[in-house]
Amino acid sequence: MTLIFSGNDFKYELESVVKLFIPATLFDICHNVKTEYFNGDFCFLRRKRGKEKTYLYAICRINGKSVVRAQSILNSTDNYEGSCEIILARLLFMCLTELTGKSAKWGILTGIRPVKRINKLLDEGMSKNSIEHELSNIFLCDKSKIEIAYKTAVTQKRALENMSRNSFSLYISIPFCPSRCSYCSFVSQSVESSIGLIPEYVDRLCDEIVYTANMILCKGLKLDTIYFGGGTPTSLEANQLEKIMKAISRHFDLSALREYTVEAGRADTITKEKLEVIKSCGADRVSINPQTMNDSVLKAIDRRHTVKQFIDSYKLAKEIGFESINTDLIAGLPTDTVQSFMKTVDEIISLEPENITVHTLSIKRAADLNRKSYTVIDNPAEQMVDYASKRLMESGYDPYYLYRQKNMLENLENIGWSKPGKESLYNIYIMEENQSIIALGAGASTKLVAGDGHLKRIFNYKFPLEYIKHFDIMLRKKNEAREFIEQNIL
Ligand code: SF4
Image (cartoon, rainbow, N blue to C red; front, side):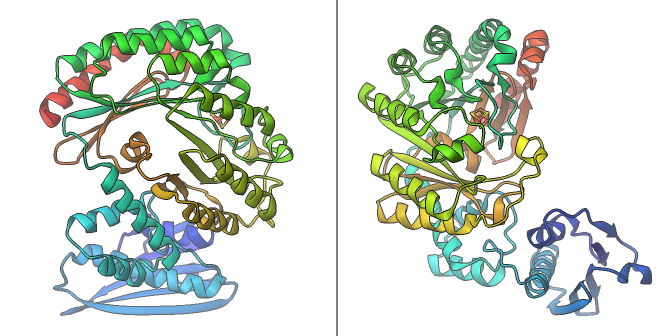
């Protein structure tokens, strides 16, 4: 497939639209129009500026069949460049829908955070009807997606009402897992291969906690939420978790803390002792993730625990008294069917967790599934996701964060669902980028949000061994955070 651009350079946006329909292709990109480019499959995207009007064309050909769409706009149109880009994306989308017979329910909203656009429109005072009209007619979104995205934005507004300007969240990375799930592409070293590194990693992480706490303390920022993620934090022993959590409570001021989550993702890492330590050190939210309630699917994704282990761990967490429990599910896993996914959703809802996150499988380059060339045949993730959304809404859950990733099956999305008032603030902050997140540990990336909304990212070393080896250099980099906070946040 050749993408030919004439009179415009909207490559990123237009290529993203093509990928909705023709996902796994490498495109030839051309900016000069030559006749030989028009021999095979192509998308020709042209902008021609006349005296008063600009003419926009999309001409696409696939397997010998061609479709043309065209529109003009006045040269004096507000936001001329942005309008041309959106119109060309829409014309291209219409051509490819007709040529491929495929649908893409998010329309030309190809970015990973569709709710951000709705939040912006709400902040500008736009009514619900006008927002729906814009998303449907300009961005070609399906009604079902608009409804969920709008509800998500409304839930977020309610949840964020009390967020203080000078607050921040703390992310603690524990990049270890007992073994690797076949769909995972995270930098998570299996405990078997890196167990020897854990004690030193814990010590360095505690040092980073002390250093960062001193830096923040002198800046007067308030700690709002804490999130332990990974990896699987409960891959650590109870005493190691306790050491890290105690370092936090000793060195940070937790008096304004509103939420404290520890991911206890894999049931094969959970023990009563670990959950008790987590609770006694102040965490009020855990995430225990079955992904599926079918043992055969768990086996197919190399996830080394059973459904029974998940249920036992979940009940244990309830008994110990966590205020909020999240459970993650994934639609579109190998060997799963619509029927068995529906059973998964029903069983999870019957447990009544406060949060349920429904992911759509995204096959990343580094995942074992990709190497095994998992092909998605007869795996209707869309039906699975639609069923989950319907059942969750009927059962009193609201969507509260939503995002998309590259290579997701059927261009779907991940949605966090919550019982009213139980939304995870941290998850909203990380998606909507409306609060600074200071991240510690290997693979962690700090995201600082300035008063005017611009962002600065600071990355820690990716792998535990690098993190340990170059720890002093990394600490020095933390001064960039100090300077940014002084100049842009306070
Ligand atoms: S538990 Fe999570 S982080 Fe660990 S390997 Fe599995 S998917 Fe990846």
